Image (cartoon, rainbow, N blue to C red; front, side, top):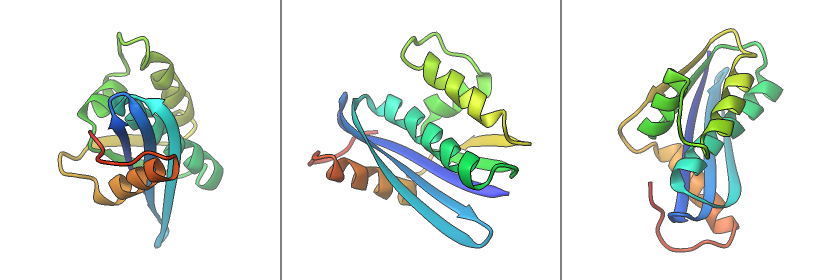
Length: 136
């Protein structure tokens, strides 16, 4: 089983955003930071899950995936497989498509700060030219 921690952060809402992905797989750690440009913090959280799925498709195609996110909105949307929000809908559809390639895909809400992935998301904002504090 592959353990994946995702986080999105925005400098402002909307603002310069980044995604962080922290993966524990087969005794190894993989860390990724992705600048996302201008978007809301919720969009950044969805994009973090999508980026993580893309990484897993490439590197761990037949594995069981266990995702963790500190975004209750993202986790609830994915678990219910439903949103009325027209901005989130195409992101949900992509997540649905990508996650269906795996034997099992689980996502769980972690209410505490997702430290590893959070640092990676903030690092992506810094790389993209954002500065100051991030919001969640």
